Image (cartoon, rainbow, N blue to C red; front, side, top):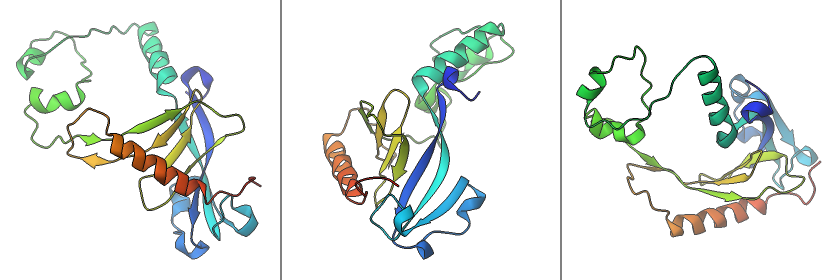
Length: 188
């Protein structure tokens, strides 16, 4: 499913490190095209960085394409509200895909389901920005997608509140500015 039809693109991902010794030698087992960048190779003002290839999936393109493939293969989508799991058991369909998300906690009396609230800042694309990066002590990352740039993020286990947190947004902006200060003026 690689390609623009599905909104999938491979991008380089960079992250700064204090020095090359701070980068685990085991990362190459898990990350595609992993390499340690030292000195002038690094896009950051740090002594080292690491780089790898990462698959970026554009949800606004991928999900409609997936639905279309499903329908082309004869699948049918039926959106319904369920009050309890007994309603599921009365269905005649041989396959049911549960898309209830955090609603499954109440629907199935799932004591272990826990939400993790996250926030993103979505920016317009910028010409010449063709990579992703993360770094710092906070959950700070930037994904260059096909249609926009996503800045993250927050990670709040157990938080059920669906309203945006302005304080968290301000904090994310500060963390991204701090990470940006590590970038060299021109990538090599």
